[in-house]
Amino acid sequence: MHSPESLAARLRGIGMTSQRTRDRMADRLRQQGITDPDVLEVMAREPRHLFLDEALAHRAYEDTALPIGYGQTLSQPFIVARMTELVLQLKPERVLEIGTGSGYQTLILSRLVSQLWSVERINALHQRAAERLRLLNVYNAQLKLADGGLGWRDAAPFDVILLTACAETLDQTLLEQLADDGVLIAPLKQPSGTQWLVRVQRRGDQFDTQRLEPVRFVPLLEGVIT
Ligand code: SAH
Image (cartoon, rainbow, N blue to C red; front, side, top):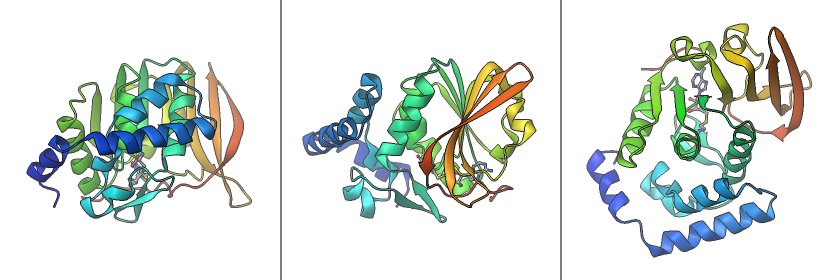
């Protein structure tokens, strides 16, 4: 089911029908308040259905999160668009994503920033995402299987660090990998138990946290599953 052949075959099958569905998704994103034309253009162009198992592919452009196995989800289009918009506002060159998952957010970012690193802790998801991104000719993203809570020290500093799983606390190890004016964007669990998207701005040794909006993500977990 996940053999490269079947993915490649599905890739060759991208047709006009999908294009119409993607245009409708982009229209909906616009109505929901996404304004960045580059984000809308890339999401209208790139094949989100290839980031799901074939049985779920027909639901790829719905306004919903969808399962990708191992208890994980591909985020709904709106949240991918919103996070990408937030990242692009910073005009970053070097971006670290934590939680590759299906690789869809990685794909969208890779078309819009010059250099991207992405970490996933579940080997099967990491492998599958790597295969998809290779078939889609993504050359500016480096993927690794690791506990992203520790960041990617060898590639630091980053202009933006983006978490696509919800943290309970923000580790200093991660914050230290931001460039001097770098920004971390992450879902963060609040004392009340609800999740908020936060934006942490680094200025030298100072870190200013701003709450943006309530969100729902799967949890950031420790360790690697091979
Ligand atoms: N951006 C992804 C969202 C996937 S859900 C997509 O578009 O599909 C979040 C992902 O974060 C899951 O795949 C989960 O396994 C991963 N994750 C959770 N904790 C992690 C950690 N400590 N390090 C790396 N990845 C992690």
